[in-house]
Length: 220
Ligand SMILES: [Zn+2]
Image (cartoon, rainbow, N blue to C red; front, side, top):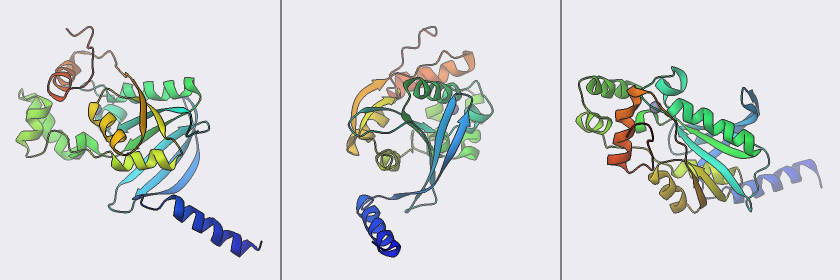
């Protein structure tokens, strides 16, 4: 077959495979990390300006249960190592667990501050300085408790080839969203981090008001 014909056929096959998807894979490269070597894959939404990044390790087999985390960007926790939440250590632990497992996916989505953006998150932190909890602060600023959407993260996971998921999360909304998107969540893998005092109120609020599946040993 001529190269041009082959290219057209490949393109047609790719179009069929991604029909109905609202994210497209744009770029892929190797990413050596302190936790081991990963592949980093960039995706773009076709319905908004949102971009997604996935760290991928090993071969992703649709028949095998794949260890997966959807990590929502937390600039303060992931980059500045803030003690107000458990996000940074959760991401590190997830990378360690995927490395130990030998295969898995971490989707990094840029919905900072449960979807309100970094500047509004700082406004929410200012209200928390005055005594509000994380939910009261978001509501007082006119936002929902949690504005995040996981549908496109589910598409990223599917485009990477996974269908059966062992989800590293304490958040029942994420489990529900992935199941609703047609992924088979065969197991929830708890991702509970021992935190210092500044994060305790936040985690108690998540457990008691948002239904997160946390033991909080050491706090209660
Ligand atoms: Zn955080």
